[in-house]
Length: 574
Picture 1: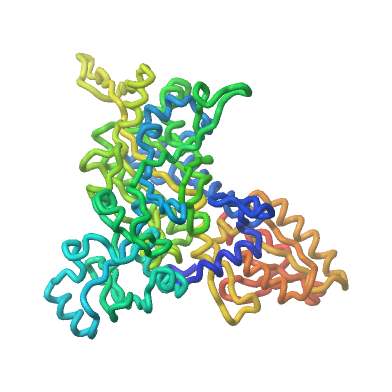
Picture 2 (picture 1 turned 60 degrees about the vertical axis):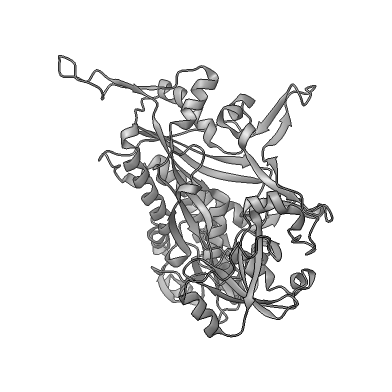
């Protein structure tokens, strides 16, 4: 695969259409009209998701970061865990989810629609737009084009994840008409992060700026902020807390008050509450990590952007326990290794960035100076901005401390390799609550990023597009085709197919197809992302060679039929 990828300019509509057409992802409960925020993975999607999960599990747990030594020079120790989706409700009280896992929500009283307050983007209309030169003069002079002092309340509002997405949405003529906008054209995104456009909302063309609306504005002036659905002011409520936890009731005869439980909103807490069990029942010693994959549930009010923000999703999380003095080194280690891991799977170039959090972004469990970074991918719906793919955070000892206090259980760790030296020269030992470095990746978001990255339009192919998956995560590893269904070709192709399936079937699908023309079969494999097709033709009958078709280059070569398995093993790196 190429070393560099270009920033995405792909159509999300085209990607979603291919996902449905080729069986990557379906809308959940589609025959009943679907249910918002839930998705089903079809045959290709299920295998792609498994391949990504298996790659993470193999590299993290089984190979300990692929054998890369930690900052202490020793091999990285990781053990697996599979905790329950439903835990004692006190777990979520201790973690802060019951009391603090809230999003500020705003309701439109007229349309009855609800959205997150931080997703309301303001369009601030400012000075007349007369020429590009005028704007450049103002910009070079450092003048604020649309200052909040001039426009406390935005002229228009749009529900979007970012200012960049708001610009993209506003290019739709239906939305412009709904909001009373005569014309709109994106204008500039300068080095200070200002997202600007030229807009005519009834008073001639003017410069407008897109930015998040300050929380104080929504608190104090909700009645004056225009609705993103009607353009009218006076219908929005002030922000109100909305808990994202999914409630359920335990017991066949239980009632909601006495038997309330929750579906887990993250897999991490199952690891923290089992820390003592793992230490007591295994031979691990700090520093070590506990890894887990599994489902999590968040009652998102406005799920959007395909599988990016869903109500049911799967995580791949590591909680790595270390001495407080070593947390900075381990944070840097995990941050850099996780970035490299995604790059090795094909997410390269300007589409993938590593972004350190600013101090005002730190989570409740992070202390000042503790590292927090996001690995972000430029999805088509975030371009030219980015969406979070994985977070790496120094959680300090927050979680272990909370659970120790609430459960009245000692969760500290005795380290006999530290502490003052005794008379015999050996350490007396030290007791402490370990600090935790958490690399937390979204499996569904990872699959979506790989699909978006792989989606490669090519007008020269019959399919018009091919999926450029890394061979390691491609759902179909290889295809075996007899050129025609006669002349003894199927009798040669079937044994080769069975050989490859027996040897590589644990890694993914080996396809066998005799229907339609060879060109149409190649086209289907291009859309499925199959990297290699092996065709048995008339020459095979005389010289025992097959044609190998390479997905990315369309090159074809002939190799001996008894070399096919080893050829594929080499390409798959197994």
